Length: 319
Length: 258
Image (cartoon, rainbow over all chains, first blue to last red; front, side):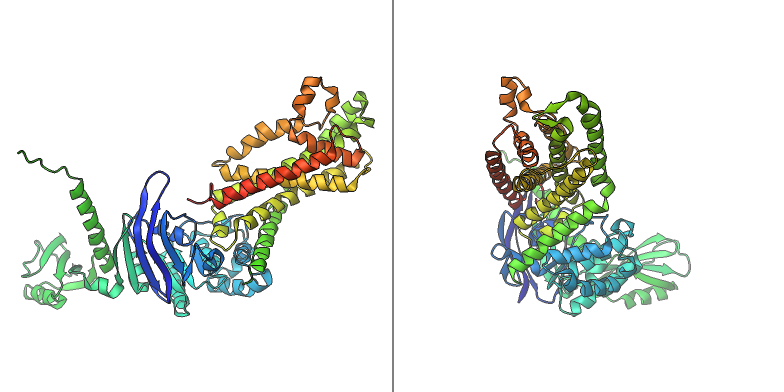
């Protein structure tokens, strides 16, 4: 069964801005799905429509087969939402925020308390449960929104940039938590600007740009489309000029750092051999950019370039 | 889940949250009206009132007491909903309800009852304060309780509509300052409209607050400038109209959905 089905979804805001130009998308049950795109691409509008914060102009949205226009209550019981911005009353206590969200889902306090305790413990907020939310750090506030979204055991969890502004250690622990709930059967849709996050967590991906889906495939298939990767090599000894490496493009960043582009079908060991022949030793090696980032930039740049061409004045032919 | 049960739990959740909010900040919500009304009783009731003499067959203190109670009910039921709902818009916590299976009428009902709870609690506090200054006799308990409840409901709905339209904190202060306060002060709280020239009596009859204050005064003292049954019917009608309007605005997402 599809956890989410979006058909020909359109949204034009009151100011005339066409945010979505008829997108269609399927997310399978149990998937960990990435919805990526640059700022203003239409990600948050799409997710806003799915969780009914934004009114659609046209199209259909079904959650586990339930049309959001047909059975409003049932569809909403199936979703948990972690929005991009903090959206709770900062004067409420941590525990009350989660219990109140449970109440909106029809769970009495007695029913919601055990689940609330478990979530607050799992997310490291149990000791803070009696504190007002304004006293929490940014990372804790993000975790509070995750606890609140999960209190009614939703089948579909929407995470709109859940780790924005969170330090790397905490981000990694949040990744483990999300992977665990995904393993337990919760379908997750993630938007993020950390492409490493999407690459590590998600099995399928859609890239949206200017209100249109420009790519919708599995993460594996997308990464296999990568034509070249750029590696940064730290050298043990300084060099004066970029070494000549046949079949590879190389650039010297400084006398200890070399960038080498390795195309599809080429091997990094060929680079090492060529360098060794010239007496250059490599101390360490890293990717210049995350693989998904390289693809993402090329896809988004492609649409920007075609827009640019379309905007250029055409030469008039005199007859 | 049974929808009726879901809606009931959601409704009580909103109501409890609202009561918890205004009791948590009691120094901003419950204490100021108590102090203001105590000053009214001391200055207008005791100091000036003794020189004014009788009004409508009662001491001036007895005469203004129902009006002052009603004034605090109106102000507090209105401002509770405007400030609470606008704050939830401002902090975006209203989204917690919008993403949940809570229909508009449950949200509206929860906030309105929250406003009514504060209005009635403040009304009770002011009534208890009034007992330090004068005796309280209730002429018609049914009319008294009905009119105070319906008035609180009506102004709580009005506050909700104000909050839906508001885009800034200034917008939630405009109506109370420029509409509600003049209507209340000119609504027969401090005087009987029979003291006014015919023309101004006619103008006063266009003021809806006059009907509420006078009906409440009838319930307490048994005297009124207007027909209390007609007033109760009119308040009920206004509630129906404003509730429908608020619900329509809410369902259209006015001020809360893009």
